Image 1: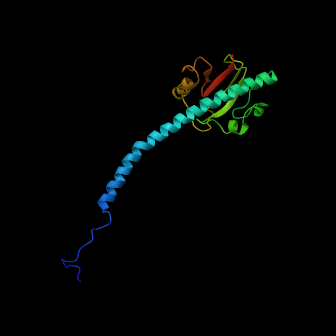
Image 2: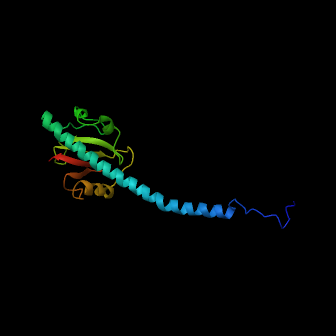
Image 3: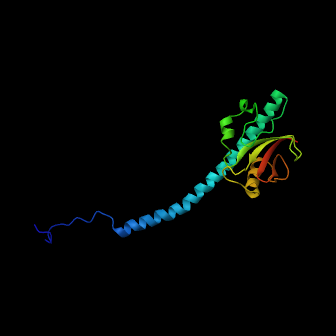
Length: 165
């Protein structure tokens, strides 16, 4: 039998051509460019939701601290757990920083007119967020206005949940 014998049945080619492979790669690239930004947005929304849940949790823990001890949380250094507060929260979570960047902080008798608050201080650790971003978080926690309500902007890069006026 010869290869060119017209009576010998030929098998169809079983491999993909280079053009077919390139078309599939291009289609996958287009699909990835559509899907990946949606995952990034879902991650950002998740981080905002986790931050809102965490700050509410810390505010409740600070209120319980006040109920148990008769005192408000001390004014601590940004990122440092106030004395005694580690009995009410997971201190490693506090010290690890917030899911949106910055570090956790407690304020006592601030010049802004409140007695006690917990919040985030964007002090160059991780991402820094602006008022527009933090307003989207305020909408999850409070009234969507950083000037009033329980969640406020108290200074540049400082956003706090007010525990006591």
